[in-house]
Image (cartoon, rainbow, N blue to C red):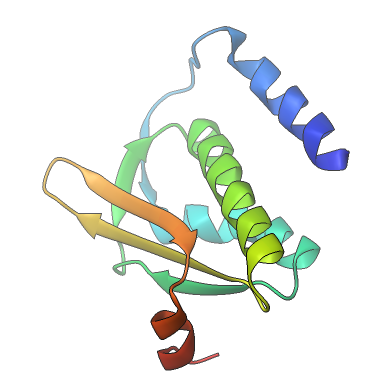
Amino acid sequence: MRYLSSLAERTGLWHQPPDEPLGELVLADSLDQALRPLREEFPRVQVLLNIPSGLRVRAGSQCLQTILAFLLENAFHAAHLHTAPGVVRIQAHDEGQTIRLEIGRASCRERVSSPV
């Protein structure tokens, strides 16, 4: 219930387009901030990170945090419900004008071969 109430509160903020200024943000720092509460709430879910050092995105800080929170929360719920222990894989790639961010449950092979 806490999740639904939090989701409703956060999505209510998007009735109007965000007006915060864009900036160059270090993606790993933004992910770390978004992961912190989820790691506390789901201590059995492990995280496999593959984010290039210093990778930057151009975004509004609050907008990016909201988007990451939604995506990561969804992945943590899926990992928590479908695997034991759950593992979430997060990776990013610089594709020139675009940063590709992939968030999902890790495959069996990744879980076995990755350090815990």
